[in-house]
Length: 291
Image 1 (cartoon, rainbow, N blue to C red):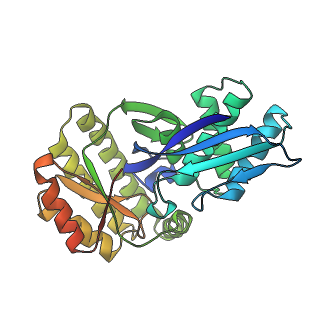
Image 2 (image 1 turned 135 degrees about the vertical axis):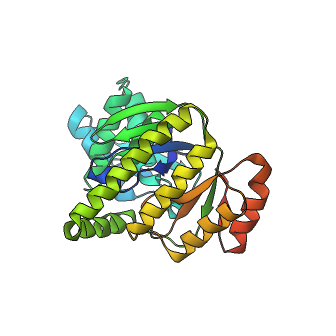
């Protein structure tokens, strides 16, 4: 049996703007989705997935792979996940990347990272037409990335930021939030373009701050980015309360991460303030997620 895995992600800066062609910063997490493949003993594919993995997306990925490489063996595919899809951590993209990697190994194709990115993005686009590729980039390359569609990728760091992740208890659908922002863009194009340019400037400043380990500056930029996301109407009262609780208890910075409408916030915090920040977030109803 052949196995491969791919990590989930956290968008650190630039969500939504990235859909419109502006850059973002995304960080891979340690939690992964794994895919194992072997030849099926039945005269059909056997796919065994946890509830948080989209069966249709996996089948679509297999179809795209077969069409490209003209493979026709029936396969037994088993997936395991270390995190829930409810958290908005990129489970769909991670499962597709893990699938392409496993198929590449199974057929001894030695696909490059860029090949895996291209095939994975094609698969996800077939079911999520507005997908920017951000989650896929994180799943393929890992680390902390500067990303701009249609595939401009720069590895800022192979490390991780000192972040806390907290779940709001509200599940959001990324596709719905993207549609909401696109609708707003049609009505307020000039305003949103100005906002996206501000986000782009934040991404560029944040890239420099990450390279210099300037966490105070990075935290300030996170706070500004969260306000811009509030201006986009993608934050919620619950997310705002969690962000405010984190900052007031000593965090360098905090913001929602991802499409908004619920899901998670990320908090940049020193070890000395971590316990205080976690307690404050819990007091307003947030759940700390280990990642």
